[in-house]
Image (cartoon, rainbow over all chains, first blue to last red; front, top):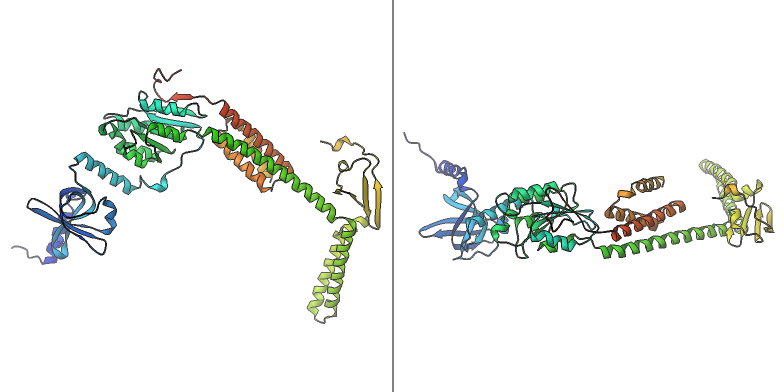
Length: 401
Length: 82
């Protein structure tokens, strides 16, 4: 007996059949646009047709980055996406992820576009992972054909720069080229601080190794930044998208990588001047500090400060003691202890133990070598000051450097 | 502070294979330390001496530069070997 489906079951079944067919996923379809509707939501609906066939298409807003043109009725286009079944309306449609104007491009081009989409989705082209070229690389790696014009251009521009140049030879043309280039890049890992990968100009076919997934992945995996330099200014390959920096030509790549020797020399002069300035500023600061200290320690000021503090303390103690609160008495006790400490720390109590402070007119004299023979000295004792003259400085070799 | 001195001495010993990039990075550090003014007098003088010797070394590297080419496998083509 034949099975009876209800519509939901039927549509689910059709949908399942369609979406599990891998040939109906990630496909390119070619046709003419009609019924183009740009919905308010940002989604785009259109019909793709040729001859007597047509199929509905939808491009959701999230995929509008996959468009490099504005769709209009009548355009011949290629769309890329998955076939799916829209159950609510029982309609087969293409869920479009990208579209290109069709100018009769061949299968190679579509393949390349697909690879680009895939690598981009994987993050190989991400701007955040691009690294800067080191300013002064110790070793520059060059991946190219040893017989090509590109190598000669690179070496000519690099000239006699203060860096090792290591050539990692690769064949840059033909079947084996992608593998050869990829191996040459990985051979430089750990040696080169920056790597130039490239070749001179040629036909699209000649440049195709630089559009290969192998080369793209080798560049992606490189631990040192890679500068791509493929063909002429107008040639752009997948290698250029993955590389940390794209140079329009091999000569331009060498120009970017070559250390700026003149700038470096100027920089060194500047560094030397800065060191000199800051050293002499620091010496001046120290001299100034000693002078300030000397002034601060001059006898009259010191006694002034200490006696003022004593009076402050006395006043505080008077106020505290007259209060009846026991907690205040306790605080007063602490203050008395503090006052005792202040006494024992002050230079005056040191002086009363028999020391004296020597001042010249430059400030505090901490070393005999700071005083010239014949110079006037002010000696501060606990009970007064003496004005003296240094008669002679006795050399004591044990203390000299 | 003691650490700074230690480090300076360590790099002193290894200065022979210090690259331009490494020398410049160290110079940058020295200039910053000197300009911050947190070093003792002795440390300042040491840092200054080290800095001057690094500057000299960089200039020597630049003066002595000539094209040094190596090839990883195989031989250099004739016009490139010397």
